[in-house]
Amino acid sequence: MRRLLSDAVRTLVPRGEERHGPLPPLMLILTVVTGLVDAVSYLALGHVFVANMTGNVVFLGFALAGAEGLSALASVVAMVSFLVGALTGGRLATRFATHRGHLLGAATAVQSVLVAVTVAAAAVSDGGRVTTGVQYTLIVLLGLAMGLQNAVARRLGVPDLTTTVLTLTLTGLAADSTPAGGEAPRPGRRILSVLAMFLGALVGAQLVLHGHLVLTLALTLVLLAVTSAITHRLSTAEATWVGPA
Image 1 (cartoon, one colour):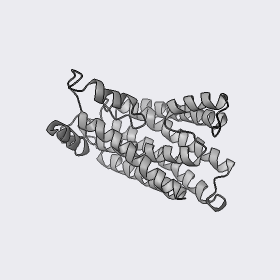
Image 2 (cartoon, rainbow, N blue to C red):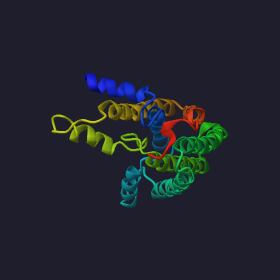
Image 3 (cartoon, helix red, strand yellow):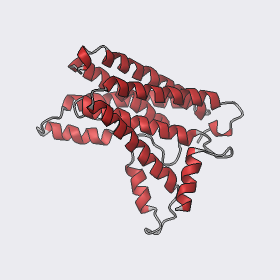
Image 4 (spheres, helix red, strand yellow):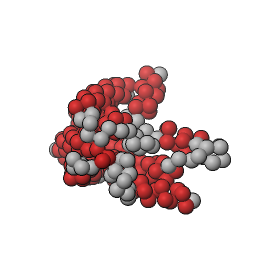
């Protein structure tokens, strides 16, 4: 337990000599963003995910088999948007290959712009009702944002903080645990990652189910903008963590 708590504290408040610097807590914020965004997409945009592509592939299969409440078109649009976002993230990663701070700052700035447009689109919708046009606008923009985030998180290379998927994180918690004969690396960080996405999903679901779609998207925008601003401020030339992973 002491080791778990120590690792959690070091993840939330990294020491100056940490290899990844402030990236772990910033990545946790982006993990909360994922929970918020998938709450919006699943609960308000027709049972589709914009961050969890495993779920979308499964949903596509279900929809093509005739399952009710699922849209093959929505799943395809989400996946294509995610891929385009990931492609953009890959290009950004190539451009800022030697400076992780600039990479994360640029990526979250682009995400902020994309999510700002979703806030505007949702705000001007008919009485807050999500029409088909607004639905697909939000799916495309959020899919782009999450594909970009996933690609950039992959290039940043912070262990156990992918920000969009938890399958390997949960597997690691069990498979690398002491009862399994492992060394249980980074237990606090792994649990924080799970809790961050859970928190985002919980808050997002509460807001969306009570008719606060715009507020949910606005909260997502605030988290992205704060992440971008903090990253830009901390990304000095002297910072050792900004180099390649």
